Length: 89
Image (cartoon, rainbow, N blue to C red; front, side):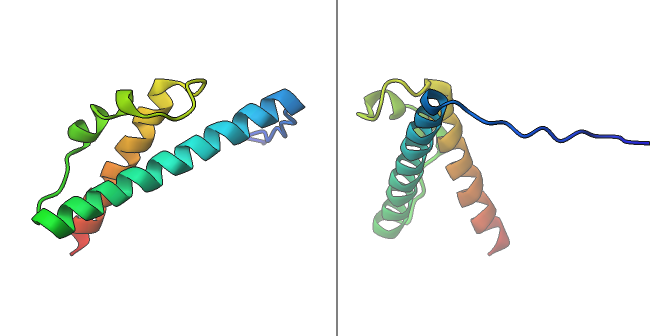
């Protein structure tokens, strides 16, 4: 009895360009907001909250073709990673 199927997706060239652009923007956002959190913690011994960083999304000068929900999700993942790191300490 087979319980799952695997489907291989082959994006078109246009879709491939869009996916690569989205991944690049997400990578830049993740790295920038992670650096912001680190700098805030090193300088003030106080972390930034996810909500504080979510308010900054509207001021980003990254590609506007990437949906804002994707950018917000990246920031939420930064917050989860940062919180998980400090819970293990």
